[in-house]
Image 1 (cartoon, rainbow, N blue to C red):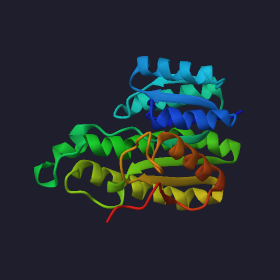
Image 2 (image 1 turned 90 degrees about the vertical axis):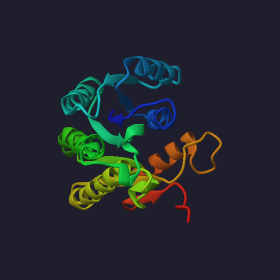
Image 3 (image 1 turned 60 degrees about the horizontal axis):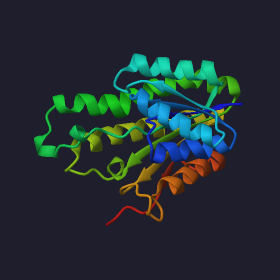
Length: 221
């Protein structure tokens, strides 16, 4: 049995995606800063018969993220699928003209150093398996910069560039890399962007392995 590891576990998209991969037979490793939140999520998944365990880490603390992913693989089995989808902090979203160089430290650590650390932690296990999937989830500013949210726009663009390089570099090793762009808010009543619909979309991306960038719905004009 292999493991689905989710960086940025929460009660919306995170829980729905964990449930989708868990019902497909994967063990589930949930990674979040909040131990209390993890306890609630793992209990909910357990009620669905899904083997899940929480691991506390902060993506801004690379050592804690490394430790969580290594512990997850040791406890639950090799990580075959990694989803990187933590929710950016509100202070990453200052307007462009109000953004200073110092304001970029945390967004870039969150969306660039965090993904690089996470990928480096799971790649050895994927190579041993001979397969793997790396899933990156971003908002629309990853592909269409938004001057109202400058930090996230710049950081997501850098994350997109890293993920695209991985897509090309890892394809010969049977490790698929994909990005799902969600242009608007994730809402339970959204036709294309509800947590359940997005979870099924991410699972389909993992199965079909058909290209790098995917959209939950078209970007608005």
